[in-house]
Amino acid sequence: MSGHGTPIPMTSRPSGPLSGVAEVPGDKSISHRSLILGAMAVGETRISGLLEGQDVLDTASAMRAFGADVQDLGGGDWVVHGVGVGGFAEPGQVIDCGNSGTGVRLIMGAMATTAITATFTGDASLNGRPMARVTDPLALFGARAVGRAGGRLPMTLVGAEEPLPVRYTVPVPSAQVKSAVLLAGLNAPGQTVVIEREATRDHTERMLAGFGAEITTQETAEGRVITLTGQPELTPQTIVVPRDPSSAAFPVCAALIVPGSDVLVPGIGLNPTRAGLFTTLQEMGADLSYENMREEGGEPVADLRARFSPDMTGIEVPPERAASMIDEYPILSVVAANATGTTMMRGVKELRVKESDRIEAMASGLRANGVTVEDGPDWWRVEGQGAGSVKGGATVASHLDHRIAMAFLCLGMAAREPVHVDDGGPIATSFPIFEPLMKGLGADIVRTNR
Ligand code: S3P
Image (cartoon, rainbow, N blue to C red; front, top):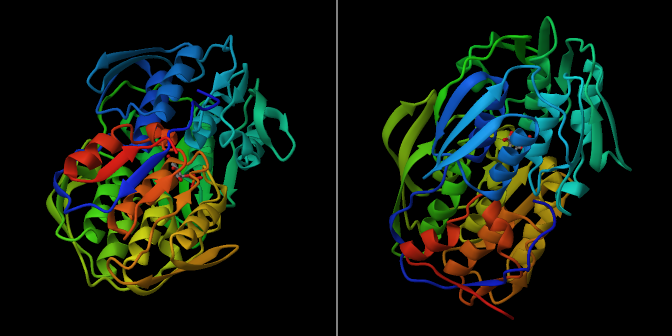
């Protein structure tokens, strides 16, 4: 849904201990892919635990516009009747992907090798984000894109009539770009090869294999070489979506910084391409443990237990870990402000082109709340003064970015004075139950009309 409703100002006050069980919603990346691949299979795909955040609901609407039958059965259960690879119909309306870069980029890939035309738009955040990173490789298949200056949405994509398979080295570490190319490769004859120098989340590869596509991954000196054989018939699946580690990050990190806390976050997807934050927190000295490790639906899953950790220290986060925790740097910087010493984060240029410029959004909001932060084009550094040292008291802008809003609300739980967020509305894109869930653990978050 493009545009944005009336801003929802929120305030987070210093709270007592957080305790209890935090059942966070389904994984956003896996939810988008379940709907898109379900729409590209022939027959009925059943999904349980789907994230019903606005980003994913927008992808569900888009799949309907492309001809799939997508039904919400209630309680996170969904069913998709797919139209098959190459079976998308031309949408009769503009495809509005709201706030979601994943939604628009994956859907563009999925339609790029079918001879149909579609126009895409989004909210002010999405319409400012770079799309050439997907339309450049999609042009190699024979698709044509016309958008605004700098390759921005709104944009019309004309799918290739006679698609060619592609060999493409992804120039930036991006699972969205990799996935767009793989989804386009589904309707190209022959083998499409994607090479990534740094491993990014591999849900698309895992799920394509699950739907019966022929796909292999080889680790080589060039990087990860992923080879997909085009024009398979995808077999519908039953998918159980694990809970989102990127959403779990918020109650986990809040528990680490609020005195006396002890929180259990069950059933979290711990795919190694997503779990970098938890390794980093353990290196900082966090009291974080994995319980009941298991595998569900082809993804590793565990229960996470986080307890207040007053003695965390700043560390240098290895740049090669960035892709596996790219969405978690905002909340990591909040933990870093409550640790002792410097936390240095390098190799994170991609943070500047997320739902907001996340380095700028976090650095300016942390500074306003009394934290020392320095930043450069692809790095930033937070000076922590120890548990409970953050002054707080400022109002910060969320810049239409759910993770910025949630990170600052967590900061307020452990600061000396309340932290105010100008608009918590974007939280609904990925974690619609954030507010009641955190309050249920003991957080003091209120909606404020300031
Ligand atoms: C995602 C990939 C990442 C991540 C985003 C979800 C995905 O983006 O930031 O939240 O589901 O593929 P990039 O591909 O731009 O790194």
